[in-house]
Length: 278
Image (cartoon, rainbow, N blue to C red; front, side, top):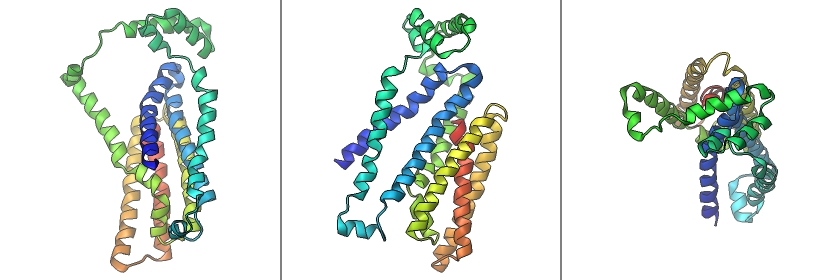
C-alpha cells in the first residue's frame, strides 16, 4: 500500500509541477508574471519547511533502529498530517479556480475569458486590449514538433532543455530527502540533525523570497550565474569534508560545522537561482 500511495503521490506532484506554473503564468498580469510564477516555488519551500518541522515532531527517539523494534506508528502520523492540509486546499481552492483566459480563448469562449479577466485584473480599461492580445496569440499557426529542429529555434530549445536538466542534476531533491542523514554524517547527533534541517527549510524560504524580489530587476541570467557558481563551491566544500572523513574515519568538529554551513549555502544558492528562475 505504501508503494501504491507513493506512486499516486508522485504522479500528482508531477502533474502539478508542470501545470501550476503554466496556469499561474496565463492568469498573471505581465508586470507581475515573473514574481507570481516564482511564488509557486516559494510555497513549495514553505511545504518543505513544514515537512521538516513535522519530521522533528514525530521523529523516533534514539535512532531508526528503535522504531523498527518498537513498531511505532510515529512515521504514519507524520505522513497523515499532510492529509487535512491537502483536503483544505482542495475544498477551498480547487473548485473555485477559474479556467485561464488563454484556455477559454482557444475554446472560442470569449465571453467567459473576458469575465475571468475582469475578476483577476484591477483595471478594467485594459481588459479588452489583453483579450485581443491573447486572441491574436492563439490565432497563430500551431507549432509542430518538427519546428523545434529549425536552426532559429534549436538553440533556444537547447538552452531550455539544459537548464531543466541542470536543475535536476544538482541533486537538490536528494539533499532535501536526506538532509538529516548528511548532517549526521558530518558528525552531529540526531536531535541536531532534525533541528538543522528546519534551518535548511527556513533558508530555502528566505532565499527563494529574495530571488522572487530580484527576478525582474536583476534579471534571470545573473541570478543563475551567481547561484550555480555558489552551488559549485558549496558542493566542492562538502565533497572535500566527506573525502577527509573517508580517509581518516571521522571529521573534526570544525569540519563538521564547515560541512553544515556549505549545505546551508548550497540550498540558498539553489533557491535564489534555479529554484526561483525555473
